[in-house]
Image 1 (cartoon, rainbow over the protein chains, first blue to last red):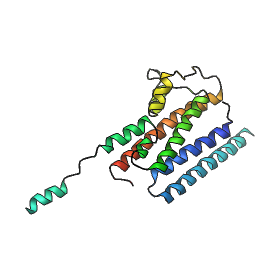
Image 2: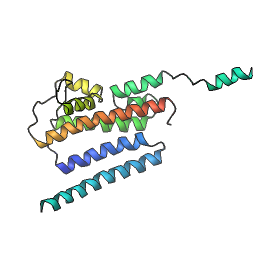
Image 3: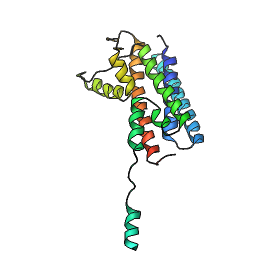
Length: 58
Length: 136
């Protein structure tokens, strides 16, 4: 199975966010909000790290 | 009489059998710790996430660590893998370990497998918290 680095990181973010949202919060609303926040932070961090590495390279 | 009722109030409640069963089955099969406590949506979501993550790691030819790795990082990775419970037992029994890592995606796969195990551990702890009434 071949997945790009970005695809693998997004899948990682998705699964980890679902589990973290369910396990770290108590109410359904908080779970959804925390899961979405975690996913946004994972993907945002991924893009920021990608641009940081691009800037270091150039 | 007042003293005896005070003693009864201060005595901690005995843990129910569910506080042992839920984390145990939750560790063995991801999500079932929630399913046995009638948290069906949470259980199904946890099961789908953890099993998918583990199986994608296997499909990417990730390394399944053994206890006698020798290296400290290998031992820690083994602990992470072992937290996946039944998935780890099945992957070892069916020898899903591809051996040497020869491509980048296989390295990602190894990380997927370790993290799936760690997420399963968090899920089992959450099932325990529900069983003891710390969480709804």
